[in-house]
Image (cartoon, rainbow, N blue to C red; front, side, top):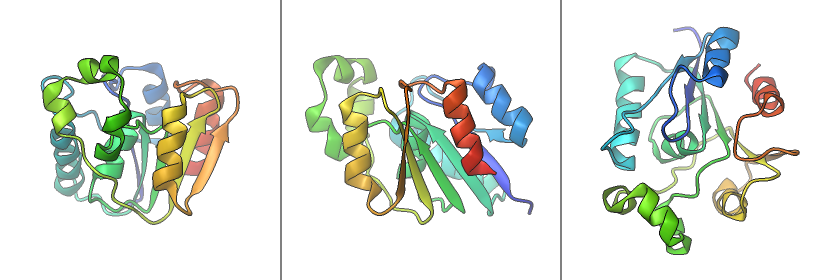
Length: 171
């Protein structure tokens, strides 16, 4: 099968957002959107794994933004290349540092279903220079010897500049 690009948006994201339309147009990427509503992180990971398996996708580059990167990180799938963009610090190991606001936002069921990182070869972690400290902390903890890129002047959002940096890694 031809090499594919799979992109997973951040929490609540969908295929109709301009940046994901751009991934589809520029790279003929498949945009995987989990069923966000009423589902847990464990459900999202299982849904992603089923998508890869059911579509017989074997040789692929996976790009995840925020919670999409988290889903990739907890999955047992083995992409040829994994690009974790602004990965969410929502692993079981990170929940002890969460604020009450974060716990309330995600909800009790989701909070109790947080996963753990599964190391994958050929992983690249990207972090916007204006991200909150917890994103840098999780990349430092799980990144190991993987490549880490700091995207200058970038918040927790895929700006045109950030998109360009991701595109360079896909090519």
